[in-house]
Image (tube, rainbow, N blue to C red; front, side, top):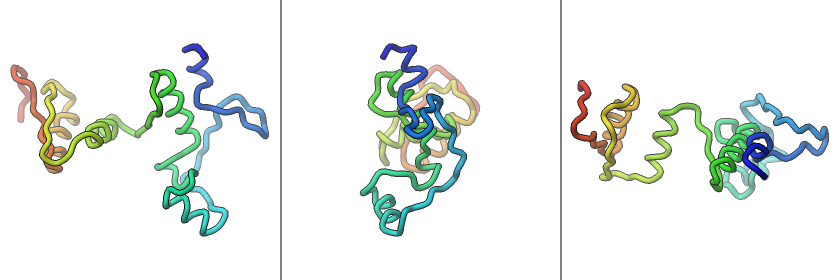
Length: 135
């Protein structure tokens, strides 16, 4: 598919029952399980499916797949805020004792997350020389 088509249709399968082309919006926080064995398999990651909407939601799934397709990626991850995105991106590749270099010309909340929150986890943010930010 070309970029324009991916923007509209990537990551979504046509609903087999309604034949709807639009992505449905699932306004739910939780899901039911066929039985306790089904629930146990989902929580043990032995079977793919929905457990809780903050972990997985069919509407978010389409968005993640679509964004990945547009960027040429394998998969995407949608989060609720920029701070969550920063945390997930850095926490995924760093561990206690690591450090990273960043600009000090940042949004105040980002600067605080890098300087204070990551420090609590043992990860040091090194702010680029030549820039000043009040501590």
